[in-house]
Structures are given as structure tokens and as C-alpha cells.
Length: 572
Image 1 (cartoon, rainbow, N blue to C red):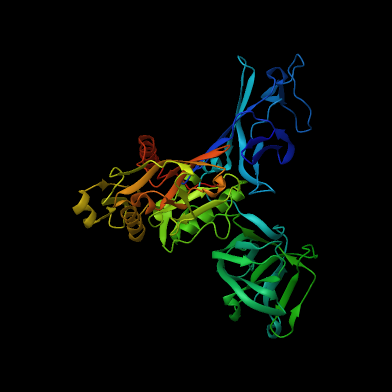
Image 2 (image 1 turned 90 degrees about the horizontal axis):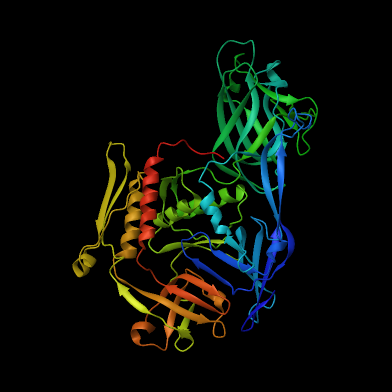
């Protein structure tokens, strides 16, 4: 169904598991709300569905044997261990809803909303059916900051097998000096490490040998830059899985030639203990490379074998412990985590700006939404994040320095302008975690000019995961720079679509005013939230005092942080 609002047409598309099902026909007006520093936006659609057409069937999962034979009771009844209600006639839970706007501004259409069906209800008193959709920002509330599992980007299976001895060999004048394995990766990849099956020479004197692994651009016969080198001490005579973990990720280009080079600093010593075994397969099984043996005098030979190896990436985030990084890098890493776990939120090259700060922070038992809000706290004053419900792109930006458009008197309803001290903070004591001295990190600072003019307004933030002074100072400075002076707020401006493009009013942007008196015309206020209707939008501007509910959530978050501090690090 199409809903006309002035010169606009709205199309509601329904997908299930990526398959287009059809168009929905809601008879209620379009409405959803968006705001900075919030996760999800709700959309409710009242649908002309006959309640009697809704059907429910029960799908059961029965116990079966390893041979897929059903296990039954003595009376022949199946043993049910789970059942699911399958509903037909209404969009299914987790189905995808898209809202598209077509207008003179967007003749080819623009997606203004994308979300999943979170629930439905049927009212038998008036034969109406409603579905509720939530934008994909809701995924931030449902995933934890965590250390992701490794994913293999190139491999020859790691198995105990034959081995070739690297090290001083007989005859000494042509000993084997390196084992090289060429490889490629399918796409551009950040590599975190390499697994090998290696051993110290069996039967020799007890001791250990250092295995040195390098990743080098190009083929062994025409090498280029050495990208990384990592040493591991090997003392076991049995073949074992050894992980060469890099101190920082190495960027590899999809399709380019690289090779692993396995050597040993012990190799210059002719002791018989300094022999390294590298597991290999006697036939050439890996399709994108091969072994190059490097001998001291005769050079390279290609025996037609592959070593056993795995080159791994961490699939996205490096974990939950961030040391000396820009808060913006943390935001990117959080979203990479979500993407690796199947989430739909994303970012672009320009949607996340660098703050220029360096901070350290460890998340533990935090949702991605809590972590994103923490990044706002760690950033300088007036930074925010915003999730576009149409594109699913996440923005992490400073308050703009220039307005994008202006409200002209007579073309909007309002605004209601006010000013308050309720959100002013000019004295801050920040309590952090325990430092090496055994006491909590404590930072206090103030804006004396603000105190002299408005009196003292105190804030006592706490975070026992902040133990680095620079990070604590960043938090305190951001609070004082943002809150040490009273700020104007426009409680409501109503915009209609025959005067403005409603999509142009994006939370986070800066707007001005024309045609009012000087007190209003001189204002440039930030859009904090927007309630979107068919043919109009209610826009809230600048910073409003926190509501009691928000303060309660802050207290709950601080309590949870204390209660979970000693939890183990999370994997998937």
C-alpha cells in the first residue's frame, strides 16, 4: 500500500531470510523516532489482516538415534524434546521490514527505515493486527564486547605427519638454512598469527631451539619486504601445534604472493641439538603455494610438498582490552565485532572521525551499546554517535562547527526556547580503579569562571576500569568543556514536508534560525532527536537535562560494573 503525504509515497517491503515476500499495507500513519546516543528505533504497523486467516501449527523436534531413526516410547509415541509454534498469515518474528520514500527529492527512492519484526498482536475485539519492528541498532543491546574466535584465512591442514629437519645438516657445506611456504589470501585480511606443527630434533641432547617465523612479500626466489618476524622457543621432541602470535595485526592483500619463512637463530651453531623439525605433507596438496627449501650453497629447491600451517585472523575485534588507542578506533573495533558475529550495523570511511586522543580502557561484561556510550565519554566534549535507521550506518562525530540549514519563521511551528542550569557541571571529582600504589585513581578539576558566575555544580563520575591518568583527565575535561555553562534548548520545532526535506534533519547536525529576534537568530543548536511522521517531523534541539530514568540507568550500569569486575574475559 502507498501512503501519500504531500508529494511523498511510502512503500513498505517485507523480507524473510533475505527473500522478498511482498509489500505490506499499513493503514496507520508512518511514525518512528531517532536520537543521538541511542540504539534502536521502533516502528508500529497496523495491517489489514483478517484475524481468522492467521494459523498456528506446532513443529516438534523429536529424539533420534545416530542413524537418524526416531526414538519412541513403549507405546510407539515419539519423544519430543522441543516444539515451536509456526505462525502463518503475519510477518514472522525477525523478518526484515524496509520503508522506502519516493518523492520529487528522491525519484529513485531512499530507504528511511530498516528493522526486524520484534512482535505482533491480534486484537479480536476489532479484528486488527499490528506488528512492531525495531531498527538494527537493537543489536548493540544484544551482543557483548568480547574476544572473537580465530578464523582461518589460509591453511594446509595441521596434522601430525612426516617432518623435514631444519638446521645444521650433513654435509655441513650445504646445510638447509630455511623452509619456506608460499601462500595467498582470498581478500584483504588483518592476520594475527600463524600455527605450525614443529619439533626439536628427537634423540638429541636435551635442550631447546628457537623457531623463527617471518612473513615476507613475494616468492622466496624474489622476496620483497619482511612484514613480521616472531620467535618461539621449542623444547618438545614430539610434533606439536605452536602459535606464532604477532604483537600487532599484519595487513595482507588479497591475491598477492607471500611466503612463510621458518629459520632459527640457533642455526649458526653446528651443535646437533639445534635441529628443528617442520611437519609437511609429502605431496603437493595446498593449491595456492608450495615449499621452497633454501640450502646454504645450492640455493632453492621445490620438492613438491607443503608444510602444515594455518594463517589466522581474529575475525574482527582484537578483544576487550584497549591500550593507548583513539576512542574512534575502539568504535570501529566494536562494530567489526558485531559484523563478525552477523550484525547489520556498519560504518564508512568518513562516518567515524578520529578524536585525536589516546585512551586506555578494558570492557568486561559490557554490551556493545554500553561500550559505544563509554567511547562518547572518553572522547572530547560534545562528541556523539548516531545510527541511521535507513542505512544502518553508525556515525561517531564531534558536534559540527557549522550549521547545515536554518529554520525560517513562518515555515515551521515553534520553537519553544529555554535555558537552564539543571545540567550545568563546573566541579568534577572522578574516581577510577586501583592504581599500583594501592589507592583509587582520583582526578578533580573545575572551571573557576563558571563557579564564580553560577555557583558550584558538582558531578562525581566513577569508573573502576579507568586506571590510566590520561584517560581519567580526558573524561573530566570532556565533562567540564561540555557542561560548565548554561545552554539553550529548543524543546520542539515542528517541520512540515511542503517546506523542507524531512530527511535533511539528521540527529547530530547543527541548525540555525531566520526571521526571529536576535536571541533566536544568533543560536546554532544541535539536533538531539527527531520524531518522524508522514508529512512532518518534531525536532528537539540542543542538550536537555537528563531524565530520572536515564540517571537510574547510569547508576545500574555503575553497579553492574562493580559486580562484574572479576568476571573472566568473554569469548563467543
